[in-house]
Length: 346
Image (cartoon, rainbow, N blue to C red):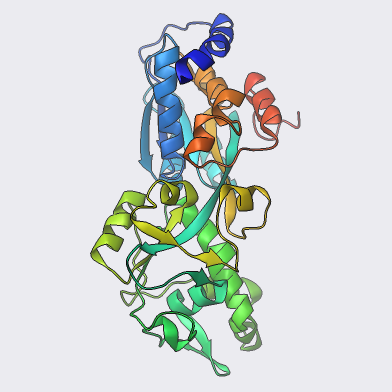
């Protein structure tokens, strides 16, 4: 039982905890829908094992969570932002402008981005980045010309794919998953097809060509999903030919409804992600507002609890749900213990 396993470790954390008087006694968290299930698992276990209220965990996407995080310092602002990508320099600057300066970055592990479809639908079983680019980019290379995307069926550019209508549900732009999807799949496909070089040869700068490569079509075949993965799943339920982009953990917990495609010939799994073989993976994070440590009761204790071996390690409940354990978890534990802010150089 998780509770029994954690008792000794939880007591060890509690023993060094200091209780602070404040008007708010509940840790507040928002952000990535990918990190949401992991944070929810930890929050529930934390509430069961400690004399602190169960933290409130909300979704909304990485960008939205970090925007709320950077509003300022105080009990009316969130304590932690969950993110499926690293915080950007412009977000760090926005935080600093609002007085949020001591930010502790906590890497919790790794996740893969997978392409999945209805379990009884067409045979979307093998993709290359070039397929995703040709299906979803606003402009593609046809012959020797860059043109507005003319493709309406997958088989038009790859006869090994089903001859069915193209419809896909990528994550919306406020999600960290979108950035990884664009850079590791769409941009890679643009390069593989020769479209990026054709854009540069046509007079675009490299930066402009990258932007053009990652711009998705807006004719109803690439439909952004601003909600969480449950909304993507609902869209696929209603569209037999639909392809969704998910985190590996969500797919692994819905294998009765979804079938997954390989990417570049590699089956997505915790093993292929841990080995680096699967090409579309990324680290997951949460960010702690340093000024709230010691003010909001249970904040540091929650972070310590999250990165314990018993929780985030390879045999913990997060790995059971689909998180790939971070081989440098010990360093992360020390970062939290020492409350080391980003850029401290320690």
